[in-house]
Image (cartoon, rainbow, N blue to C red; front, side, top):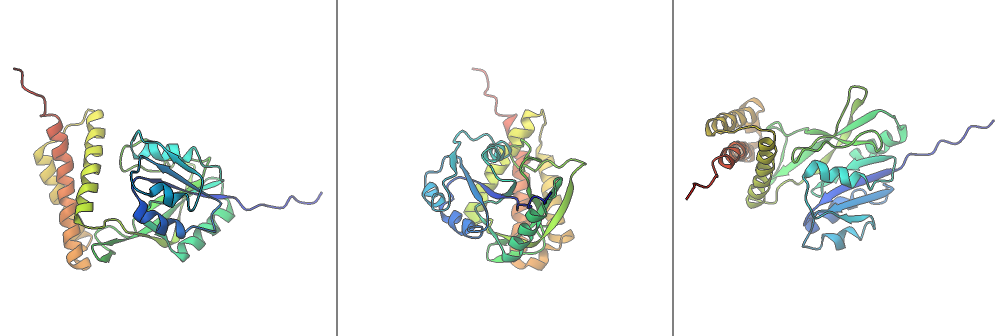
Length: 264
């Protein structure tokens, strides 16, 4: 009997968004034309995000009741129909080298293999190649039916079990992570609240002394051990801001447990 021709597996790109009209078009242009499906899950945008998204896909969905990053990604994956799913954020761009390695990985169609990409971040006018920020490898490509994200409210991760193989792809995703200092502070505050909410739900406690120690450790790790000083003034600023963000997480958790109103 003649062999059945082998078909190339299909590939979807999935993106969760909110108010990303300024970023989304540039992101999707880097995957337009070589992926089979684009899935956008919006969490209640008030700008032109939907209009931008629909220039690239009709697979646009809305879940405005924000459940956290992990659950939102899981919901987005439920809409994926392709064999493989590639996750991107709106502030990321796929380089030609990364595209080639993604296409090769999908064509190989390994059933129990997940793939990590490297992200190169552009922060405050400079690519950050130290501070522990590069290559910043994260699992972003895998067979759709194999796995998915955990249910963490923030800092969510793809669930990887012992029977899976993790392979690094060549090429970078360029990550335009912060527009300016205000954007950093707003984004950081959101992560801090989600982190504190998650820890509180697990019965964890925070203290000011924990915040100070972890913040100091964060700065020394990024600026000294991870040679952030090689990233110039941006490396110093990023290390300092990251230390501040670390302190705020623990302070937030501590304050949440102090905020009980006194009895009249």
